[in-house]
Image 1 (cartoon, rainbow, N blue to C red):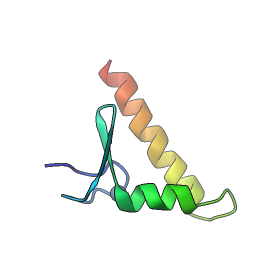
Image 2 (image 1 turned 90 degrees about the vertical axis):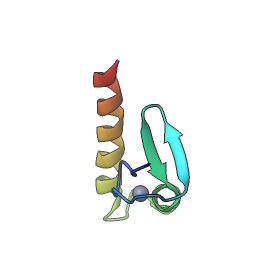
Image 3 (image 1 turned 120 degrees about the horizontal axis):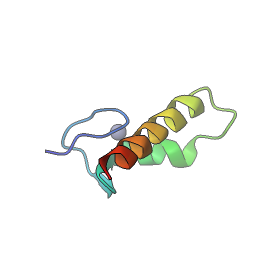
Length: 58
Ligand SMILES: [Zn+2]
């Protein structure tokens, strides 16, 4: 079962990035969110966490 690394949604369509998975909802949010958006920091933090997780897996 795939679980989104950002929102923890289960069984969503999405893509695998390295060892992690991002659902379509989050990908869309990322693509639509600008730096002025209050959610931007949250999303960036989530992506950083995904990246750090993958770094530690290596
Ligand atoms: Zn998601």
